[in-house]
Image: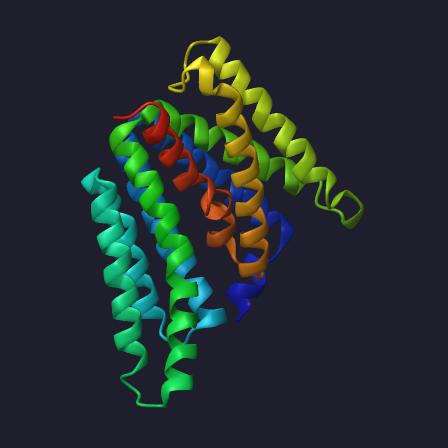
Length: 243
C-alpha cells in the first residue's frame, strides 16, 4: 500500500516517465528488437494493472497479453491474428472453468479480454514494426512521446482538450519534417492520408487509455498512445508500401 502511494506522487511519476523514456530511446537506437522486447515487458505490466480493475485472474491476463505481443516477432500478421484468436478462445475456456452460469461466464470472459487485448495488441504492433520497418517504428515512438508529453504538460482541467490539440499539431509537424528529410517510408502520394491516420489513431489511443487507466497505472500510460496507433501505422504501411 505504501509503495503504491509513493508511486502516485507527482515527482515519482515524472522521474519514472523520464527513466522509461530514456530506456526506450536508448534501446531504439541500439537495437529495435530489444526495444520491442522491453515494450512487451511494459505491456505485460499494463495487462497486470488492467486485470486489477477489470478481471480477477491477473496471471492469465499477463500470459495472454505476452503471447499476443510476442507473436509479432514472427514478422507475420497472420501469426498475430492466430495468436489473438487463440487468446480469445482461451479467455472463453478460462471463463467457464468456474461453472458460474452463462451470464457470469460471458462477463468473466469480457473482463479478461479487456485486460489483455489492448496491451497485447499494442505490443504485437510494435513487435511487427521492429521486425519490418525500424524507421517507421522510430517515427511512431517520437510521435507517441511528443503527444503524451504535450498532454502531460497541459494536464490541467482547463487544458483538457488543448493538450490533444497541441499534441496533434506536434505529431503533424514531426511527420512532415521526417518526410522533408527523406526518412519516411510512406510515398509522397500517401503522405496526407498517413498523417491523418496517425493523428486520429493516436487520439483514439489516448481516449482508450484514459478510459482503461487509473492511478497509478504507470504501465498503461507508457503504452497508451500505441493502443490503436501502432497497428494502424503497421496496416497503413503494409497497404501502401508493402514489405
